Length: 357
Image 1 (cartoon, rainbow, N blue to C red):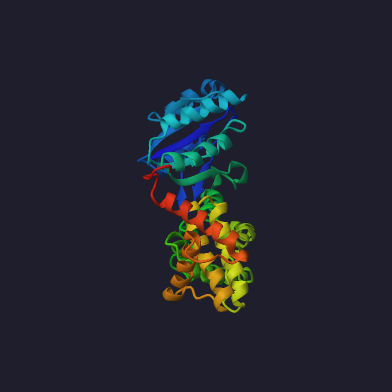
Image 2 (cartoon, one colour):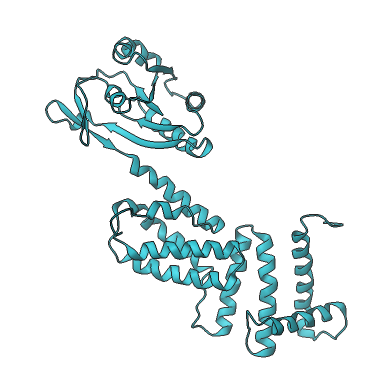
């Protein structure tokens, strides 16, 4: 474990920091309290030249095993990137990290927090705590410690939403919403996210009809969730719901609507796959959509799971394409699209292992 901290140039005053049921011995530096609470951690304290000159001797007397890491003052962009490189080099892959934002120089704690956030993805860094020793909120000779870690989940909420809207993968939502122990306040929200998980699986396994139904269910449950009480930690999701609803609206399908309306709605998934550059899925589903369209025009209804009836339509398309049967004038353009679509789909399915790929 690494305890990452910073020092500014202030004249720090002695105080006893308290965090929950933990109370540290009085000290000028919050790092001393952290070192006592996390004795197994390696202490890294980032210092500018000014803060090293002012505090190095006192810090070394109090925390002899702490490593002082030199960083620039961050007065220009080049120095920001130097700080990034320095922090990256001192934080190993997969390490558990406690980040202290108490004693910092100007914007350096904010910059360091952004670096740490990036390293969570780039180096699988496990951010255990973001802590702030609130000297200004002291009472007598004690000062509280604020745990800011839950607010890091705002980045996770944004990441989870973007991932779902861009790829259809909702797996990142569940860990953010699951409430351990007590029953969650917002049962419809939990239920909606279960539907999103099923929707992700349906999209990834090419189950178009199931995806449409699950999207509709998720939309309905999100609407109900808006009227329920929310966990405080789930508040960021409220702001993201309109984006979620918009994305789900492209995929949703109403079982109670007419077959013509359902067919129009089902094309939304083709558009969704194209928008998200999932071309193989878009082409495959578009081909199935053309069969459904021809069924509706020629047979009065489209049956997504009646193989024989769908095969009849495919055989007629292919016969028209080969010139074995005459093509009605109003179907010529449609048959041309069918031919092109088949070639494109086959090309992708062969992964380039064909002539003139």
